[in-house]
Image 1 (cartoon, one colour):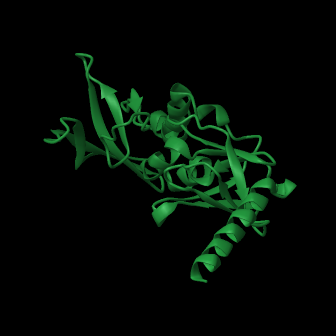
Image 2 (image 1 turned 135 degrees about the horizontal axis):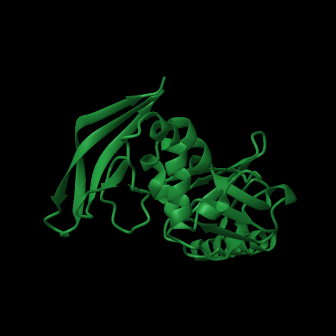
Length: 232
């Protein structure tokens, strides 16, 4: 009897799954969505490093009636078949390692993505005409956009300030746990500094390069305050 009951439950679950896979999401969910951290949080908070890991593969979400594409700076993404749970919840039918689940929040017109183990939560909003989506997959454009966003005013205010390289995380190894930029020295090397922006003040910190004994990779630690630039 218990075996028959188990078979019935499994069969019912399979039928429900097959039915949901065949369903489509409401039309209002279709379209392009952008991770709110990319253009909103970075601008409001004046920093980049807290969200760099999100931008690797969850910067943009594109939804059509029965498929979605999730991609970012390091992961081009692929079309995934949508499994509809109900009018507001959906996931994919493929075995994506972090097992994303999506919820459309009608009142705020946002999509919330959660992952297995809740290690990552991303909020997506609709793409606006002013959003520069081309920076997502172009390292030079990405760096140029954020260098301008964060430093244009300070570069004008202090002619001695030079920034030759902004760390944007386009690599598999993460050498910084803070925001950093590099200045090219006379011998051609890049010297890295940490930076923080609060209100109208840019604080620049010295850094120290270290070597991880296990991997052999370099990583930098932030040290003493080197310079402070205040906008008038």
